[in-house]
Length: 255
Image 1: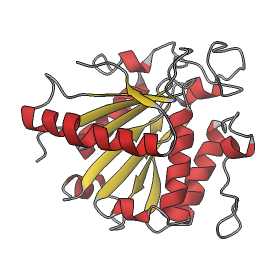
Image 2: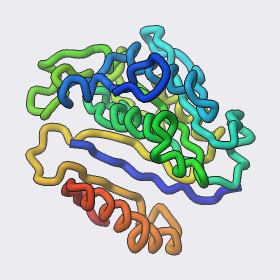
Image 3: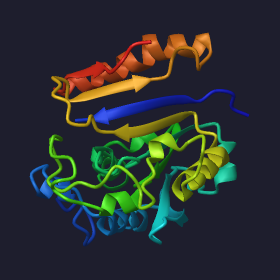
C-alpha cells in the first residue's frame, strides 16, 4: 500500500514503421496547430495497435456524450488497474487538457509516446515505471475551439475553451466533484494510487522568459524525507535535463 503521492504541475509555454504517419499535426504545422479530439484519439489508437505495451480504455462520457479515455503503457503487458496498483514499478499518471485551451501537454505526450513505443529510442523509460495517460480530460472544452478563445496566449492557432459544456472549471472541481469528468478522474486515481501525478497546463498569456515553468508539492503536503528528495534530487535533475536541451525553465513559485 503506497503512502505518499508526488504531485507535479507543469506549465508549457515522419513515418517510422507500418503505414501510419507518426508525424503529429503539431509538427506538420510547424508547431502552430494541435489536432482535434478525434484525431488525438486516432493517434492513441494507432499507438496501441502498433505496440504490445499499450492499450487504450474508455473511462466514461462527457456532458456532450464524448468518450473519455485513459491510456496504459506497461512493458510487462499488464493493463488491469488492480494489478498495476500492486506493481513494484512506479506508477505515473499524466492528465492533459483540464483547461483545454492549454493543450501543449497533450502534444508533448504524443511525441513522448512515439519515442517510447514506435521509434523505441526512449523505451527504457518503461523499465521501472508504468505510464497511465488521460489524453484530454475536458474534450467538450477542447472541441469548443476558436482562434479568438485566448488571444493573449502564444498558440496554438486554434485553441479550446477553459471550461466544460456545463460551464464548470474542472481545475476547481476536485473536491466538489460536480462534473462527470472529475468523477471519472477520481475513480481512476483511486484505482491506481499513483506515485507521481502530472497535471499539464500552459501559462495563460503571461510574457515570461522561461519556455517551461513548473511547480511541485514539497512542503506541508508531503513527508520531510520525500520533500528533501524532491527539492534536492528530483526537480534539479529534471531542470538540468530541460536546460541541457536548450530550454530555459524556472520554478513557478517557491514554498
